[in-house]
Amino acid sequence: MTFASTWSNLLAECEALEDDATLITPLSEQRFRITDVQEHRVIVEFVDSEESHPLQREQFETLVGRVQDGIAEFELDRLPPEADPYPAVLSLHPRFEIDKQTGTLSETDDPTPSQLVRGSSSESDEERTEPDLAVYSDALLLVDALERYDVSELEEMETVSLVNLYTLLSDVQRDADNLRGDVADVLLDRVHHDQPVHGQFGSVQRTGRTYRSLRDEDEVLETLEDAGIPRERVTSVDSAKVDEALEVTEVAPSDVYEIEEREYVRKAEVDEEEKKTRLQGLKDRLAATEGGEAEELREEIEELERRINDLTSFRSGAEV
Image 1 (cartoon, rainbow, N blue to C red):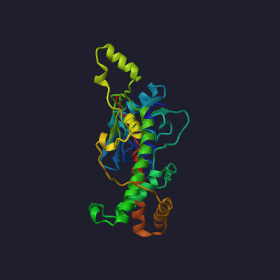
Image 2 (cartoon, rainbow, N blue to C red; image 1 turned 45 degrees about the horizontal axis):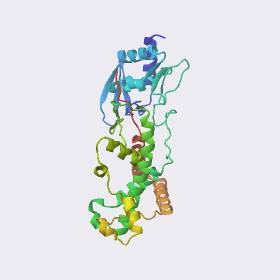
Image 3 (tube, rainbow, N blue to C red; image 1 turned 135 degrees about the vertical axis):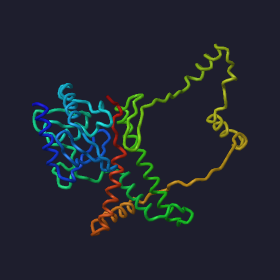
Image 4 (tube, one colour; image 1 turned 60 degrees about the vertical axis):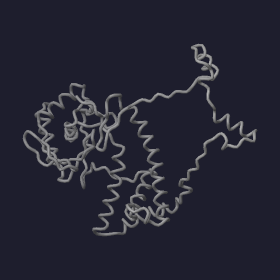
């Protein structure tokens, strides 16, 4: 198939899109819409910034050539950042598709539907579902609490309100740390040294840290003594051994320790049932409310879902 034929088919697919159909760039996951289809270019507008950019025919031809040069497959992280929308638009063509798992754009023999288009009534829409994550529920409750409490004046808040806020903050911190660790484990296999990976909200980079632990005590002391370092110079008081000695003597801990008392607040328990009841109440309120208030609440919850989802998104920083 010649590129002229491919281009003609692609333009037809673009023109057939609904006005509110939204595409997602495969690397930075930015949302954009096609606003105009012309003979030699496609005009797109990014949803968040409302900036318009022309996507040129010759650039699509170059991208198709690279896919074919790579034996019907092209690694998307080889694209420069400004070229991120091109594969998303090209995937509208029935013979080109993006594989999110492998991060590649490929040409297929059989027609395949685009997986990246989102619209109000498009059959390829991705259905939003509530994630089965503790951090999602706790974050939703925390957002609700932050909207009800005036946290700019903590000293003026009631004690019960402070307890509620502290409990939710503690739960979100714990849940987020657990999820962050899981995300980091996956990222570790995809991020390379000296190659920062950029996302919408920041970037990450692979780094290393060296941990040291002493060998057997006698081996260390003998090695240092052979090098002319006296044993007394490197030996120190071991707090664990001191504690053992205190148990069999009448020496008071204050005689050998500098003792400083510090008080702090810690979470004693969590009322999970109350959290579930409150969370369900938010959902019931959304289901029962009509008109502008319902739409406003729905948008708040959808925005929260989007923020949580975006926190795990990334794109490769490698460029051509």
